[in-house]
Length: 393
Image (cartoon, rainbow, N blue to C red; front, side, top):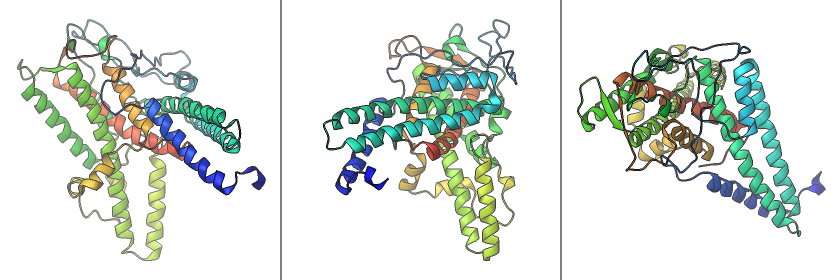
């Protein structure tokens, strides 16, 4: 086996080239993180109504008038582009109980395929086939990255499925006479995935956004909001980032509390706390329903500061670290999902950017979904990266 590995000099060169491939593929498939890229509009993705489905979720999304149009839906706006995503979509419709096992197998297969391609390139370094295998490795990296993004998205959709909350489909299907109304709001279900301290921060976020829209939008009345579609999309995308940030901060906060308290305890108690922490992390895996509430913390761990106070103590470097997306795949998913939700059959510009009229409860419903999407994205990104190494952002 040792004879099959490259010589030391070649090994160094191949490691550098391997990193170059990953970075090159990241640049090729991920544009700068901004809202509304020039992507082709994606259609409606999921229709989970099936006679084979083991669970049927009912949700009514009404446009304009409550009795105008109703449909039962658990749709998500983004359609998968790869075979892997389409396959998982079919499993989620018909066999959701094997969805996670199938997703894990696909991730492992993609990881093996990429590794095999890179190994063939490493062995060709210095030969006439070096350029050929380098190009093959670059194409395989891009192909795998698109498939990984689809798998990550389906894992996020699965987490919404687990809490029985349908994702809002493309808004163009719900807007009638420029008015958008979502019903039922499902606030309780979307808030249930967060702990009490996180939920307090989320409610402050929602209140500040609704007040901002009231203050800066055209004055209609106190129960009606009016906002430009592009602006609406940017607020939604920013709320995804906020949910991602809160998930990162809450986990960091809980870990620091556990470690700080463990240093003051005898070795036996330190061991028990470590065991509890490991169990808690396992419960927050992809198959879980979300963040564990603070009531489930061990009584031996004392919380010296609340989460909000902990966040206020961040220096700029720590704040940036917690807010930064860890992978190119996560940035691409936010971009693609937001475009699929708010985009139309034409590229949005300042000239054709229409205003949307909606009530505060509909705005709150969309923002709660965005925050949940960000929180789920953090979980999924962490899970996938253990099996398939993601590209650093």
